[in-house]
Image (tube, rainbow, N blue to C red; front, side):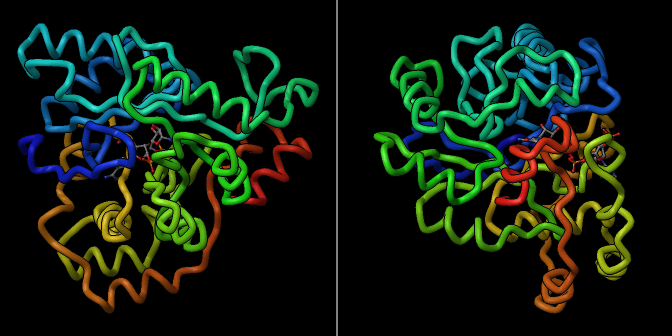
Length: 300
Ligand SMILES: NC(=O)c1ccc[n+]([C@@H]2O[C@H](COP(=O)([O-])OP(=O)(O)OC[C@H]3O[C@@H](n4cnc5c(N)ncnc54)[C@H](OP(=O)(O)O)[C@@H]3O)[C@@H](O)[C@H]2O)c1
């Protein structure tokens, strides 16, 4: 599939359009540098043009190396053909496309393993952090700035003093966590939502098989000749948000892009919209069940 077949969305204040299907790079167990680099290269070959990385995933180095390799191999002609989202300025690139505040929380020291001690978890100086993000954009280090795992209340706080509003809020969103209120709020404010863990982070330590083994989704998949994962991804796509899903397997990478030229019926959507809701990914599952973390989780 050619990269051009993936639709893009225009973000507020960003001159570069963002492909709505992107490849995640948080792997579990951690895939390691070479395997991650190989997977990113494979994804470029398969047609992905948007990559999601973060300091916390240990994937920014292999993403940077894979891009350099893709340029050397002629898979892409210029860095500009790719859209790179990250959550800390740590890539070997001249700029990133989208820079997000990963969590609405402050850790007082670098962490190398989780969960973390209660003492190092502090509230984020939301306005101060956002002013620093605005500076990154003004300096040309990133084309757009945004947030991740931010609830409406915290976004309101940013908006009360921002000169550049967040372009994106990246949050968990899938058939079992539909985020209806947050979606409505972000739409009203012109903030684009990107859905992470659209497959429920199947087979990872922060997720489970609740989506890929869901019977309602499986029945719809059977009737449409698709896989359960494709039904989940198509539902997310039809919500009008962009998607970051991770696969380091070539066949699943391709299958996860094959959601654009068919649609769900009204009846399928109604069935999916009746599924009981359960948030899968929590900050507490990563950082530890500290009061401040639990309070933030409860807002999302
Ligand atoms: N901002 C945040 O706080 C945050 C939090 C979580 C994730 N993210 C980002 O979002 C990305 C995606 O989310 P995620 O990794 O949590 O979960 P996900 O994309 O919902 O699920 C990924 C898991 O599903 C498997 N998988 C992929 N395609 C499949 C298919 N067609 N059928 C069955 N299984 C399939 C993958 O294994 P294989 O590789 O073996 O295919 C992997 O184990 C992350 O990699 C990361 O970049 C951001």
